[in-house]
View (cartoon, rainbow, N blue to C red):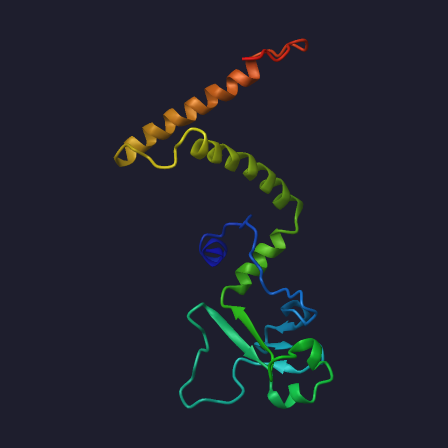
Length: 184
């Protein structure tokens, strides 16, 4: 979706990027490795490369998994002699780092996520999404009951009108400071 928004449509994605690459067990995360775009490889903190393939194949391979990721692997020769192995890959013989084929678009979204305009758009989006949540939960607009595009449009218009009338009554009804709760 981010790839389509950024490259095809030219839309700035003001959405959070789900990033599960950070580790909390004391070992190195993906952010500790340097990405080298020109060489198409990662560099570990010790400076050793992690490549997508270590030997040439007769039939060229793309190394893309079904999940749309490319696995970058270190050399076992480098990992076994590395003094940082307990912090890098203590339970495996080599380090593997998956990289999404859509990572450039994800980088654009991460960069936008650090701006003030992103924070403002998230605040405004939250207000709108709360109204839709209210429509779904309070006014029971979880599914449309009328058929066709015009039926759906009419039903949504009626629900939005009812929601706006409810909100208007709260804004326009004066609240007296000395009103006490009347028991039922």
